[in-house]
Amino acid sequence: MEKKFNIIIADDHVMFLDGLHAILSELPEIDTIHLATDGMQVMRLLHQFNDVELVISDINMPKMDGLSLLTEVKKFDPKIKFFILSMLEDVRTINKVIQKEADGYLLKFADKEELKAAVKDVLAGEQHYSDTVKERYMKSVFEKKKNPTVELSARETEILKLLADELTSKEIAEQLFISVNTVETHRKNILLKTGSKTTTGAVKYAIENGILD
Image (cartoon, rainbow, N blue to C red):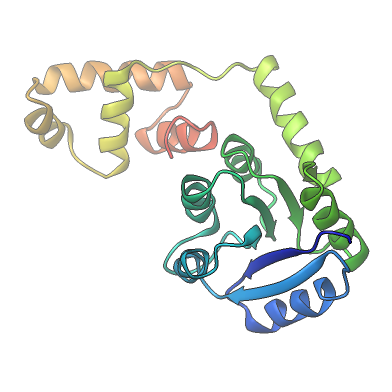
């Protein structure tokens, strides 16, 4: 007898969630489908039902987003497959999903046959990332090799985070127990390393390149 799987689908848009339920109910591999509208509800379902083998989740959700949920699910049980289904296709998000070792990433504009094929792949123990996601990731890897990301020291990163929180040099100096001149020296080094003219530019560069989360 062919193995059947129990899954959870999480999305805060109920109509989209119902649509996913209808599509995936057509798969003979699927037995029970639990629905959730946020990450916290997913975790409650995982504690309630110990036979869930796949979580399909959006990223932007209330209470606990999909990336945080991915981390929590893998902590709860690393054997549970986790599949991202999202509108987000920016390189930074894609990199985070890959770093967190999701089993798949499909964009919401995919057709239902591609969705079914992706879910089948993941249930069979394979990874499934859409062509668009793979192309964007490979392009970002190529660009990083061509233009290597700068390396900030631990202290520079610490100061940049505080600058991102809009602290003044004086406030940073007081918090880190260093002089204002030392803060200013680090700030100038940060601008130089990131090729930025302003602190805002340095913060933007650091976020885009994964230096700051």
